[in-house]
Length: 488
Image (cartoon, rainbow, N blue to C red; front, side, top):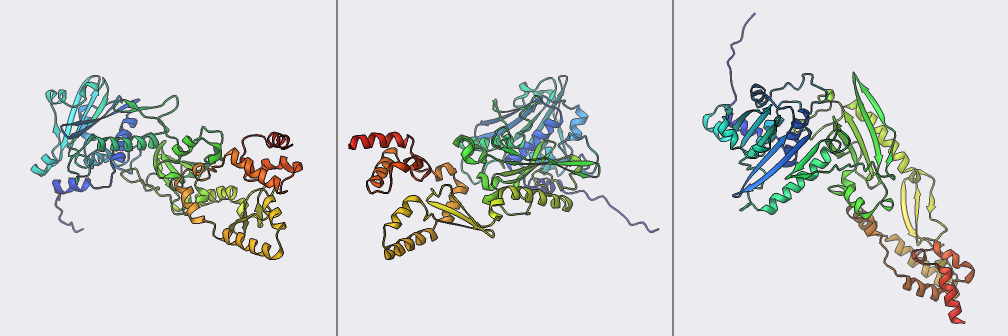
C-alpha cells in the first residue's frame, strides 16, 4: 500500500470568517435563528432589546432556558460543532451547529454570549477584528468584571443565556450617512412581523412561549386564520417515509364577503393574498418556508385563498435540503407527486364551476353582467336579459335594436379584465367592488322607470333582486306606497 503524504491546511481565519458573514441571512432571519437556540433550551420567555445609543446599535437576546456550563458554552461557540447527519433530539431546531455563529456574524462584528446555571455565569466572545488581527481562531473568555459590564446582564436570571450583538455593521445600509431612530424602528417592525409568523404556533396555546421586543409582547400571526368559522379546514393527509411521518393539512381562507375589512387586510400578510398562497413548511412547529408552490403550479388568482400546512420532523432535514439559514426547503420527488394530488383536490373544489358545461352565472337574470364559462375559458358580457335592458330594447325599432345591441357588445368586449385582476390582487376586494349610489338616487331612478311604464306596481317586489335596486337599504313597497299616495 502506498501512503500519500498529507499536511494540515487550516483555512485563513480572516478570510473564512468574512465569508461566513455572507451566507445570506436577513436581519429578521438571523434573529429567528438565535431564538431557535432558546426554544431548544426549553426557554419560556425570550426578550429582545434594541439599544440605540450614541448612534451605535446593540442588540441583546435573553432567555430563561437551561443555560450552559463554561465548557458547554465554549463548545457551542465552535463553528460547526454539530454534524448535520447525526441523530438529534426530535425537538432540536438546529442542524449544522452554525446558526448561533453565522447568524450573528452576518449582522455584527462582535458576538458575546453569557450563560448562567444556578447563577454561575460563563461568558465568551468572538471579536472579528481581533480574529483578523491575529489571523487565529481565538475565542476570548471574559472575566467577572467584563461580565458585569455587559448590556442587559442584570436581566439574565438564575438560568438562561444572553446573546449580545455589538458593532452591528450589517443591519443598516452602510450607504446611509446617518443612523436614525426611524430607520431602527422600521427594522424592528419587520423583525416583529417575521417572528410573529415564524413562531406563531409557539406563541399560542397552554404551553406557549412568550417573546418580547423592547418589553412589548409579540402576538401569534396564524396565516391560516384557523379560528374563523368561515375558514375551510380540509382533511389532513399523512405521508410515511422510512420511520418518519409528514402531515399535510390544506386550508381555504374565508372569502372577503365573510370577513371584516380589517381582518381581510391583516391576514393577507406582507405582499397580499396572491403572494402568500401555497405551501407553508414547518419543522417542529417552526415555519421554514411560506407562500410557495415549489414550482408545481404557478401563483394564480384562483388559488390565492389556498394555504397548505406541511409538518416535517427534523429527521428529514437532509431529504428536504434544509439549509443553514432554515429559510429554504425543497420536497423530494416522492413528496412532490403527493403534493400535486393535493393541489388537484383543492382545484377540484374551487374550479368545478369552470370545468362544467358552459352556462350563465346569474340569479333571476337581475345582474347587469353575467359570467360565461366553457371549456376552461371564462367571459363576461352585459346581460341583455336584465329586466330594464330587455324592456328598453323592446321599445326600439329593429334598426335601433341592432344599434343598441352593437353598443352593448362593444362595451362588453372591452371589459377591463386586466385592470380588475390587478386591483383584486393588490387591494381589498371590498374597496374595489364598492358601489357608491344613495337611496335617493335609486328612488329617483325607480320613479323615472315607473313613470315611463317600465316598472309596474305588480313587480315592485322584484326590485330587491335587480341591480342596482338591490342596493336599496329600505323597503321598496313602503316607498312606492307613499309615492303613489302622494301623487294621488
